[in-house]
Amino acid sequence: MKKKIAIIMMSALVMTASIAAKAEAKSFGMSLAPSNSWRYLTNAEDCRDTKDNEGINYGYIKLNKIKDANSYYVVAKAVNSDGQNRSSEVVAKQYGEQQKMKEYSMYTGHYYYLDLKNTNYTSNYVWTSGQFGWY
Image 1 (cartoon, helix red, strand yellow):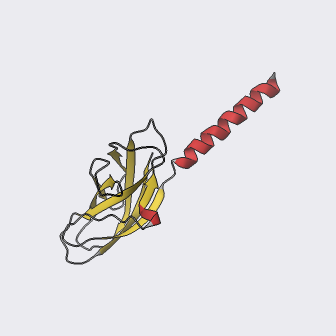
Image 2: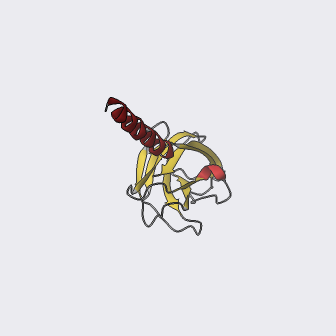
Image 3: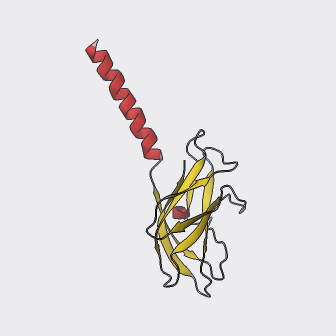
């Protein structure tokens, strides 16, 4: 009986670990477009992620760095490959807390892209990095 319980407990632990592994943060790096324009990259592996879980309807972003002396914020959302919105917009602050994005019409196993814009008007591309993901 004790052996059976131990096997069940180990199975549950393995299943929990595999689900948690899918929810790991994905690192991104992207140059923000000038003029407060939105920008997403369909050809950049680190700026896309798949929707992993059917029952969870949000994604997240955490901004680590924005190399703009006058800005500490980006606006973020998820889009599909056609650039159509698939989440709410959130404002993420450099070194700030993780921000949740409510997902709209996302399907498990499909790619969705991180779409960002600088809150500060600039005529140059500005590098930014952090973590994001869609659950």
